[in-house]
Image (cartoon, rainbow, N blue to C red; front, side):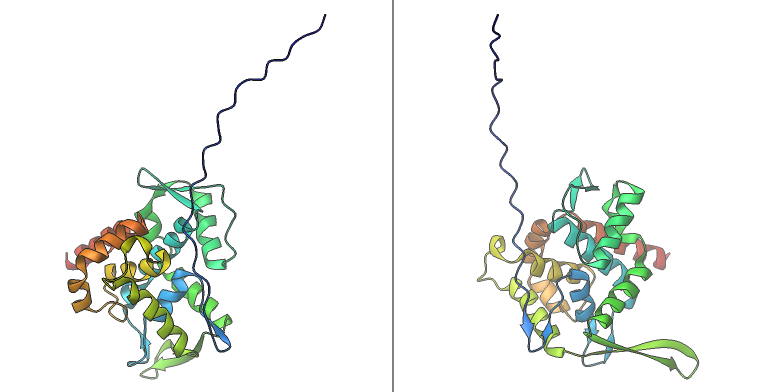
Length: 240
C-alpha cells in the first residue's frame, strides 16, 4: 500500500535586515585611514596645535563607546531592552574590536553603560599600540619634568586626520539629509560631541547644531545615551 507524503506549507522567508553600508577606506598617498571608529577618534583627540592628546580623562570611555558602536553598526551586537546582545555575525578582524567582543561573550549580556565603563585604560593603550603598529603615530617615551614617565605622541600622517575630521563634520551640514549621511561619520561627530571633544566639535558647533546632533544620535544607536550617562555619573562623582 502506497503512502502519500504531504509537504507542509512553508512561510516565505523573512527579509534580512539591511545593514548600513560601510564607507570605502580613503587612502592619502601611502597612508590609509583606519577603519575602526576608536582608532579614528584617537587620531582626532590629538590636537595638532598643542601637539598632544586632549580630553584624556574621558578618552577611555569615548574609545569604549566607539568600539561598541562599531560592533553594533557592523551587526555583531544588537540592542536587547537596553542590553548588548551578541549576534551570529562573523567576528571582526580588527584586534581591538575582537577583544571587546570576546569580553562580552565571556561575561554575558549587560547594559551598554556597563561596557562603556569597562577596561577604559586598556583600550586607550590597545588603540594607541595598534595605530603605532600601523605607523599612523609615533610613540616616544619621555619624562615630565624629568621625573614622571610618559609618552610623547606625534602624528605621522596629519592629512589622514584632516580627512577624517572633514568627513565627520560634513554630517552637520544642513544641506545633507540626516537619513542619508554615513553612519560611521555620524557616530564620530555624535560621540565626540557627547564627550565634549572640542578638537572635533567645538562648543559653538555643539550649540548651533544641537537639534541635528540629536537626530544623528538616534540613528547611531543605543551607545550614545549610555556614554552620556556614564560621563554624567563621572562628573557627579568628581563633584561630590
